[in-house]
Amino acid sequence: MHSPNQTNKHSHRHGHNHSHNLSSNRIGWVFLLNLCFTIIEFVGGMLTNSTAIMADAVHDLGDSLSIGIAWILSKLGNRQTDQKFTYGYKRFSLFGALINGFVLIAGSIWILFEAIPRLSDPQMPQAEGMLALAILGVVVNGYAAYKLSSGETLNERVLNWHLIEDVLGWVAVLIVSIVLMFVDLPILDPLLSISFTLFILFNVVKNIRETLKLFLQATPDEHVQKEVEQALLAFQEVNNLHHLHFWSLDGEHHVLTVHLTLSAMLDAKDLIALKRKISASLQPYKLAHTTIELELPGEYCRDTN
Image (cartoon, rainbow, N blue to C red):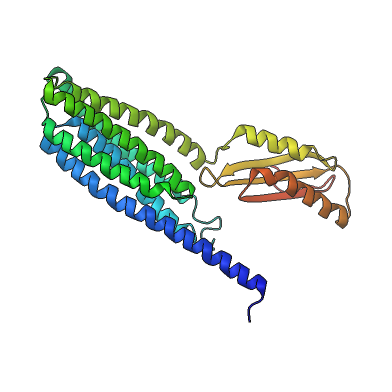
């Protein structure tokens, strides 16, 4: 017979796994939907001779990669730490973000090489085909955003914003296609594609810069690091601190290691009390991992160079 405590733990674990599986399934369906539509976009862009649609196809390719990576990571997320990956698998998301960013940069450069020459010699795209693809784009991306809107995980919320952004992009293509059906202004197509591409590049370069900083274990938030330092030094039992390292596994789950030099010798009871106070002071920062070494007065630090 299970004790009530065991039953509650089993129920919580079952509920967590059920919620995780629902999240993974939603992301999986959205990934397949987005990937299929991206292929349709590339084919449709070539058939309609529209660089704007090709630019949006590159954008959707990036979103497909992001969703695919998020899907894989949602599968890996439940895996426990092991001897090879002692911090778990969350850091894989940074690697995936870098791959995604460089693919988008390559695609964007290709679009610019296609679109910029058309400014001097604009070619009229097939407006009716653009209109059909734009309507399909609004429907597909709108449905995908609706599917993820019921999700509660961070992955789903972030991806949902990407999809809403896609819907707005397709609304712009829709408007331009309608204008081109009544006005002979073929230059609108390359102008729209260049605008899309520059917007993508701006965001991608910004994200790659932040991702590289985290990948190289830079401090995720200097303000928070300073707050943590001040909180630890506020204890009268702490004389000073050194070897404070504050870095992030994936931009969300942060790690803190620090050496604290005590101001006086403490017995076991006082050491336990100090540890509890330190733990309470760090609770608001929701750190994924903390390693705090307490050094007695005059004790040699083995990490000193």
